[in-house]
Amino acid sequence: MSDTPASALGDLSPEVFLRDYWQKKPLLIRQAFAGYESPLSPDELAGLALEEEVESRIILTHGKTPWELRQGPFGEDDFKTLPEQDWTLLVQAVDQFVPEVAELKSAFRFLPSWRIDDIMISYAAPGGSVGPHFDNYDVFLLQAHGRRRWKIGQHCTPESPLLAHPDLRILQDFEQQQEWVLEPGDMLYIPPGVAHYGIAEDECMTYSVGFRAPSHQEILLHFTDFLGQYLNDQDRYSDAGMPVPAHPAAIDDASIERLQGIVLELVQDKAALATWFGRFMTEPRYPEMLQAQEFESHLLQEELDNGYGLTRNPNARLAYREEGEEHVMLFATGEHCLLPATLLPQVQLICEQEYLEPETLLSWRQNPEAWTLLEQLVAKGDLLLEGEDE
Image 1: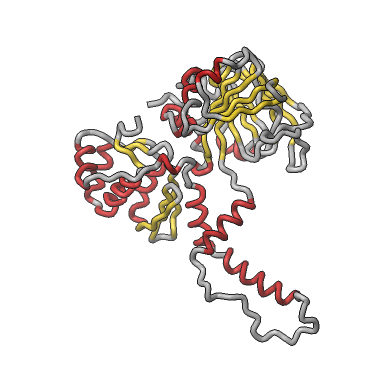
Image 2 (image 1 turned 180 degrees about the vertical axis):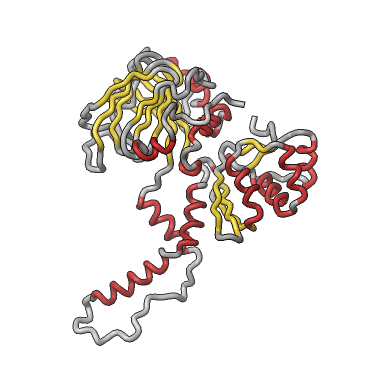
């Protein structure tokens, strides 16, 4: 098991952090992970960037153009031609490929687990940077190796001017307000919209724990698409009882109010909204890495009898919602199922634990519904027999 602390906030309580800092202002936490050692070396991170299924990029401060962007996957020769300084390698969603990196997420249990997006790791040569920028989501920046200087700037808006770059959102103006040098184990929290500018003091690695924050545009588009799947084509706009229009080409307020009533009635369906949201927030980043598995029904019990537990697929996202007193809804990688409320303890365990002990699971055999759920999640690929994720 990992030595990851129960919380990454140091002496600060989760209540104070959420009240005073979350989505409000930056926070530096010295030695949030005291003695932390990166489970990945720079060479191993570069090795991940060679893989086809891994998202990676390199940013050179002074390349063929200012802030030159190179997209992966890379070849070994790509790294041999890099200069000795002023470049950064970024590898996305490393937690979904390296279980030891995924363990880091357990230190952020003071936040909803379904809000965590992924852990990106950056390696920077001395002077390496991705430029002054801002994100539209919260991020925790853990220094895992070497030192990085972080400069904190102004609060930005969609209107904040950017450099004319086709792929990178680099701020044209950076108004520095604070500055810190982070050592291994130090961590910096940055709220959405706050400008920040990290520059490697020496060879360094930084872990970025990012959070899902769907835009209002995404919410509206995806929710209405979801609703549309269940609407009857026979339900149409109606204006029965309307008066004779004075001007036939005019769209009057009464017509708009009728239309607004239709829309409001649809979006006020709280149950539909909750179902869509749970599915949307548990959609996997790499669905192709979640493969359905065929196995004999007796295999699960045999493996548990032999002392093997179940682990969560690193690409699986799980969450749940209590539906009144009679049901609990489980969301698993973009799908949902309605279960009896008696399964709430089992659902909570499945959603909140990365590893399920065989002794605990074997007791579920006495509950046919719990055992069937377990078999379905294994068959779906959300849960893996111990050792299958290695």
